Image (cartoon, one colour):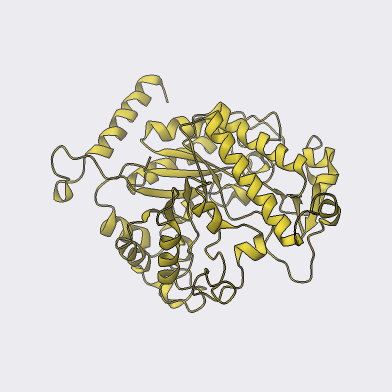
Length: 407
């Protein structure tokens, strides 16, 4: 897109953020409200984009721009782009190889800068671009020989733990924590991203019958802790605190947000927990004390993945929404809610997800909770497909007017 065309597009996008259809127009002179309306754009395993590895640079770019344009047309204002899906990069990184999800070959130059383009083109459309990183996942397979020859995991095999058929960096090693921060923060230093974003992967989700082997690291660094679980939580706490401080130093305008699994602890485990019976609890299983991060104000926003329907027995959306609102109340951390658009119309999901109005009801519930500042939808491919019109229903019911991204 040439400079003149890009400028014209930017002016049109800005106009779209300040003008609304006549039937729903805001009072003259009033600014659009501030509200998170986000979408995750996942690249791991080519989930959302690129649609397959090996497309030309022009094809990849065209698909990316289509996702950004679709976000604008649905009156969303934020795209959370996965730029480091598995110890790799969607920008020219001095630390890690190019992602295999671009060309099909890890380390192969795709011939363009996806992150740089995404930031520029998102901003031209009035969208925020949040750079989404996975800190510790190295590969979705268990064979180090399949990694690029220059991959840090091959140069430092002592950093890597094989677990559940995948490769992970060991969060218990200080040198690993320092390296993954350097790798991620390189992007923050180079590009005017609006936020740094982590998802729900810290220590890996439990795999029955398998043990995450960090015995040596625990023996070396865990003596001051009452047990291994406390030591592991401290490792993740350190990552969160250090990343937050580094982001604020490198790019003060950027925020730091995390999107954890929706259940911190069940109330049957901890009286501070939620009225749920979830099989996974982030505090115990992923060693991520997500409630503390919010209460202590370590992160700028939290976006719990409340991927259940209203009334779901083990994890009721309505109960979890209220629980997270209480956690965020009085804290310095803003609360957004992760929504499971991908479940809408999936015949394998409970009957509630066959109703196009289920997601819209989520937003209606949230309107009564002032702590909830918006919603983020998983994920971009599902916004495009909108199998049963659930996203269209959300837009019609709740997004008739545009909204500014919260700052």
